[in-house]
Length: 91
Image 1: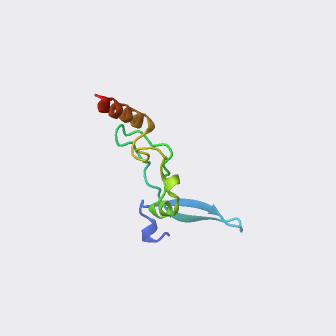
Image 2: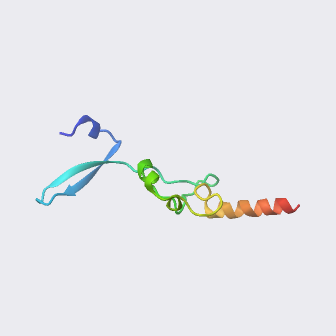
């Protein structure tokens, strides 16, 4: 019977085959939801879906795309915003 903390939905079950041939259950925290664009709510490409502790150990360049608004807006919304900004500045 699993302990009380393992019965909640907070942890996910991972079935691991041991060298002896038995299958045991390991419990691991679930991954967070995928990063979404602040404008159109589309899923962001190039942003990993990891726990905060693992994200802290990643290099900055692996956490989000290297472009203006990287990690906040999708490429299509960034392109649209930059067009609007440049057109607005010239008038």
